[in-house]
Length: 181
Image (cartoon, rainbow, N blue to C red; front, side):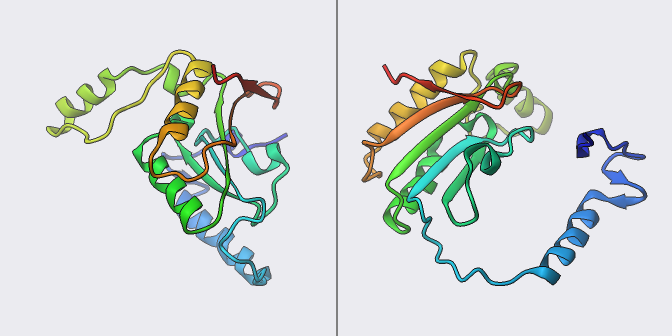
């Protein structure tokens, strides 16, 4: 199986003399040529929002059997529930009708290999402290529990009864549900 990660890049950010962004734009042209408006509403059919890590190894829709229009997908480093995730979930629920939240962290996450010192190092390098926390963690299960708690206790979210958390195994593709307690 060939993956984009296995394609040699001649120079940083370029493949076969073209930038990665140029390749993406070309791919969009081909996509748009065959595109037909699906006639969908912005409201997800399954009334679910999925919060997951941005890790490129996770094909979230394939892993969950989702189709276009089924869910809102919110991805960030670690799949951590941050203030911005609460913002997106609040809009998803209050303006676009979602009622369920699924949280997905994964094995071998890069957020388990860094510390909050990352922020300090950035400040030393660029001369400005980031306004955001790194939200690094050592234990994915515990961080899923913390993320579930953040969703369940947010005053901005209307629907907090159906919140479930999982850890995706990047080697097997299987989800393991995390007990919230």
